[in-house]
Length: 401
Ligand code: GLA
Image 1 (cartoon, rainbow, N blue to C red):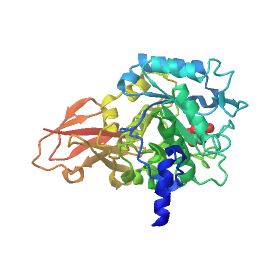
Image 2: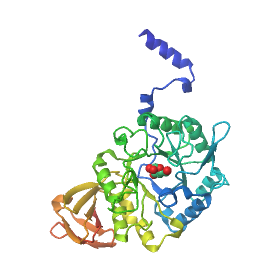
Image 3: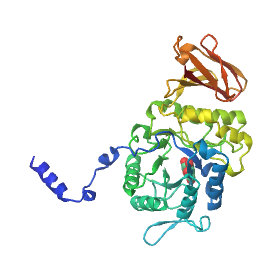
């Protein structure tokens, strides 16, 4: 009783910033209110890796406007690894002067002038995965720097972290961002190692659930197998986590490979549709300034985007599987449902979702939209049937009438 009184008296006369918080208190803080639907945008890594520079970022921002991507919802322009120069004498991070001669603030201002938001990358260890300075020991200083540059989104990686505890490390940066005073989406990238879906709901807005994607539908190879995954491998790792996602806190199946030329158009349509069904962030990873029409038609499919961005925030999941044939459902805010028929096989396959599997009451009137053919179709005896191309999908939305 006495100790409680003393603590109250002490904290009353202490400036609030001086009242120490335990890690657990920081972890339990309310979420930041951002990313109420899965973040959409572009990230430099999948296409440009360490070859990113300010001209590429400007060209991409311009192309996101002229292609219609911005108006379709792609919002964040995120520079991934390798933008950093050294820390200055006071420990402040600087930009690589060769690649970003105008500095990050000027670039962020340019991105904002195009009606887009700006994101950047750091790492919870001493060095990033690309060997640039990480934020360990500089978290609050870096968050203030990002805020002063106008950063709206931070991707925070997990290389070179030694024996750091992930929950603690991400909580520290979440707190630093919060205290910077600027709303900054926090994208956690620790590859699912410490199962962030179990503890990070109030820490990050999205968390990667797997190692890195590479531009392959289902062919794994020796060069990638220790750290990178095909599209179907990611699908199988991310799908079971569906119950942990929701508004403000998403399972991140990694950036898109659509348009990077390693897959056929049917495979990219399947990749994009599965990400939308899983309410994954949709971060384009291609060269937007030079994309072809096939790529544009996938990334700009507004009906599929609407499924991803549905306000209910339910991550869709598989409800039936028979060999290579699968049925997926995602419940939507308007009382309707998105249905995906997925064919993993190398031959075309007929897939039929019965009324029971779709869970649509027999008496309920319905309008069914084919989201890739862009036309209305009919249910036959309450079932939805399609011949699905190899490595392909048919995707539908059922509206209550
Ligand atoms: C890790 C991340 C990737 C990318 C690279 C950059 O591999 O998972 O998404 O950010 O680092 O070095």
